[in-house]
Image (cartoon, rainbow, N blue to C red; front, side):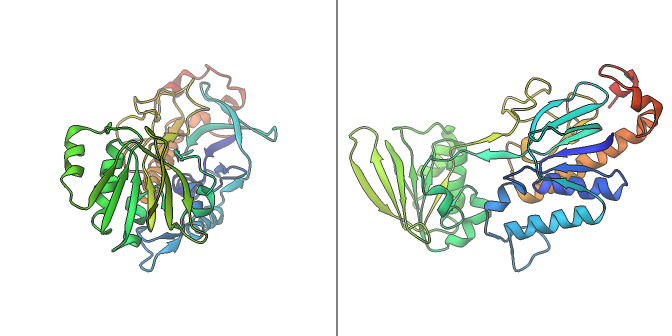
Length: 330
């Protein structure tokens, strides 16, 4: 029986592990077999995480967070969660290797996945002119010519933000009108640095070491063309990783896990969530880390408020789903 099991290993998961471990809760972090470390493992230079005035590589930052968590006693498991049972007093988390972890609390920090264009060059050029985060990477494109793909509010926001750095921003959309709100559309149209390209989709990326050009196809005529650019930002949305929890936890209209106010408390007692899986707006490493702190503190307070659930107690050992009504209080 564990006190805390953390599902996910990005900034939210590892920060939750640091705080939970320092509180003596001996957390188990199920980090994933392939994507341990989260989206930052695919990022090169991170310049906006506090404490690194010269920047830090994404994988290096995640390695340091993991080592810090392990230093205080967190256990990191490289496996994938395949099913969960969260409704009982004792939660169960099952992995692909058949391991079953029982815990009094669970922190969900599974993050979100940026939607991709589905091009074969995406993996190779990710972090080399191809980005999904203008706030993270816009600074590297000072004086450059770049493209943004998308037609919603996020694409308008990304394109407008990138005009602070780039000399020209091509805004590519596969239809003849944007889905964004009128005010966001007008803001983009009024910006002399933004050049809309309608009825067009990106069908390929050119460049060996970095993005050098886009291969485009007109969705009406089928005509193809090439657009030389120094970078491309994909802003076609992201999907919170909630597949395992949808039938047990309340979700928001945006598809993220619903939490109580500024806390990490979900719709089930003893279950907490942090990071991008609850955040449809900011999706930054530092906000995810702060969210992980909140989740660990909430889990600690939950356990302290229910001493009858202490690991090793008779109540915890005998608990079955639906028992210990006292635990229904968050």
